[in-house]
Length: 72
Image 1 (cartoon, rainbow, N blue to C red):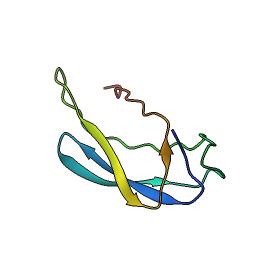
Image 2 (tube, rainbow, N blue to C red):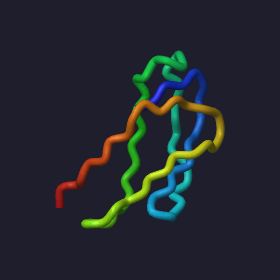
Image 3 (spheres, helix red, strand yellow):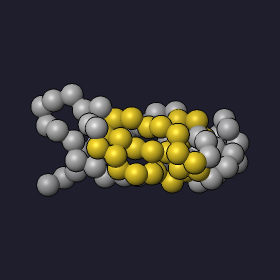
Image 4 (tube, rainbow, N blue to C red):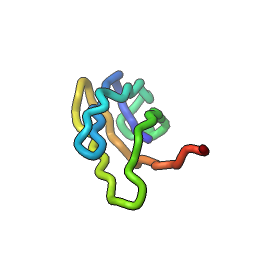
């Protein structure tokens, strides 16, 4: 979940693997945390996974991320 006054992209890195960019569409204000972006990546079961969001293009205020398992 994020807020952004402009369209942008955040670089996603999981366990040292670059997954390119996550699009962040404008939410109308830097404090309007209604933006949601989704991305599916493999995580390592039973170990610590490191997820990093970094600047790409534009900007976004990230409120939180949610990690959910996929049904198999």
